[in-house]
Image (cartoon, rainbow over all chains, first blue to last red; front, side, top):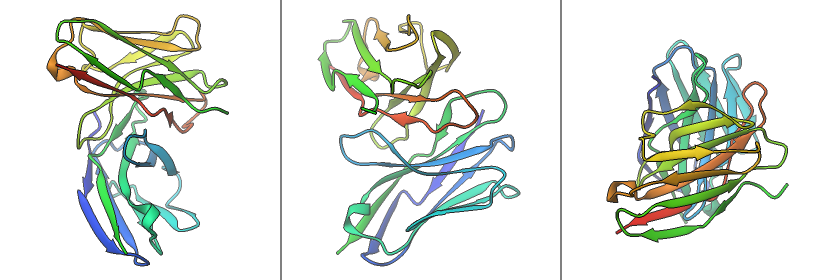
Length: 113
Length: 114
């Protein structure tokens, strides 16, 4: 089955700086890669996603890049703000018929004022 | 769009008891998923339905777990003879059935088995 590795587990950045979270996946058939933000006591909230036929996608301060050859994808957050503090999860969906997402273990992003 | 609703938010039970959780998906979504999340980990896939049909089950879903979606709308997840290792957040998500439609999660049911 699919295996998703996520780094770092904790990331502390100064407010206004950029944050980058990286993930690798194992199944070359995976074709969908969402990113979720989870705040304390809440369920994961989708913030951006990318499909395997696209190399990069941007939505305001958030961007995701995908390198299919290397089987890795990254989340970039620019001009970080205090409300960006949360746990971020990457995930991958295999194209082999299995429909469930496989998640990474999460990155706790801390924005220092 | 009221989002995915889960009930109860919290459940404390004694080992050996049975528990049942409910999930109401976004109304036009015909796919419904159950995930389990333990502290410091990402959600782990348990099972999913398309309409009333249960199409996939993870190896994590032991015989003590059963999920239903009898009318293709709300779903229930039952855990029989609970064990302390069942303590976790149980998350429900829903999506449309076409292509890689994004999953929308509820806020989960936190289960504590004492």
